[in-house]
Picture 1 (cartoon, helix red, strand yellow):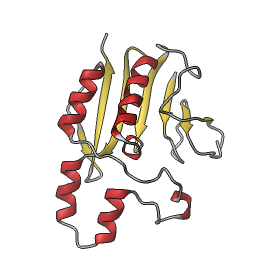
Picture 2 (cartoon, one colour):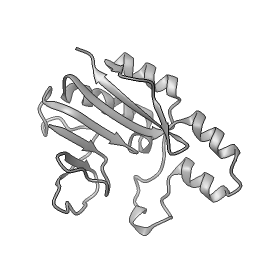
Picture 3 (cartoon, helix red, strand yellow):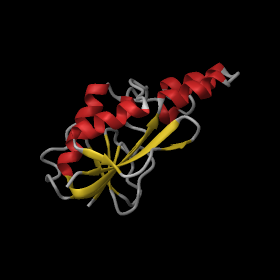
Picture 4 (tube, helix red, strand yellow):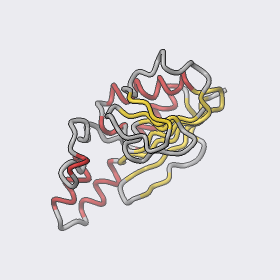
Length: 165
C-alpha cells in the first residue's frame, strides 16, 4: 500500500491520495481525511511508502511531529516516508537575493492568493524546519535517513526516511 498525504491536486496513480479538502478524484483513489490522525482508517504496519510533499509546513510543529509518529506506525518495517518542504536556511538564502517582495512573501507564508483554487484556510505556512533539526527529530521518532537531503526548487529540502527495522 502507498499513501500520498496532503495530496491537493497532485494525486498519484497507485496511491491512496489523502487530503482534508473535498477534491475531485479524477479516476484516482482518494479519501478526504485529516492526515494528523489516520488511525482506524489504515491498519498499522501495512504501508510500504508514504509521500508527504508540501504539507508538513502547513501545520504547527507539534502536529507535524504527530504526523511523523503516525506515519511510522502505519509503515511496514523498512517502509519509506518521503517528505518535501521548505527548509529555513535555503529559504533565507533565496530571500536575500530577491527583489520581488511578493514572491518572498509567497514562499514564506504560502501562495494562497495566486490562484482562487489555492484560497483555503490551511494554505498558510505555520512552521519551517531547519535541515538538521528535522533529521534529528525524525531520528528521535524512529526513522533513519536513507541519503543526504536533496535540495530542490531553490527553497525546499526532500528527505527519504526509512522506518528502522
